[in-house]
Length: 149
Image (tube, rainbow, N blue to C red):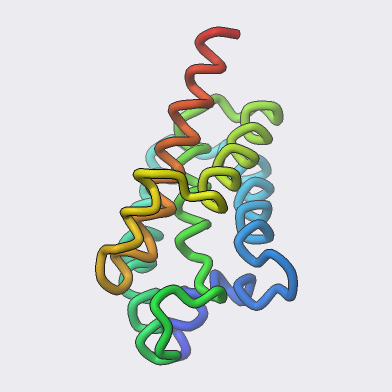
């Protein structure tokens, strides 16, 4: 089971990217979403998000406990779930996805208040929660832009 949790937590090894593994993972989700997931019935990508959320919470908790770190850099399933959440809320045009990608990375990296507070939750909950909060902030800004455009 340890190997499966590691594969999930590192999102199929993307967490081991030598530079910016969270950004690499978000970019991979962007490409996967645009080329595959956006063409599927809406319920399937939404279901994948739910699976990422549940598996991500368990896998990140198990991985963090094994390596004895609160939020190991190699755990990137949280970025995958957060980035997918942003994409689920907008039409899949390249501009929308690009802006969603940039806004999500901005909020995930800087973690302004109250996003930073979400990290205080224990174990996998905290690992996942800050990225979901960053996704919510990115979604709000993106939808405001689309509304005012």
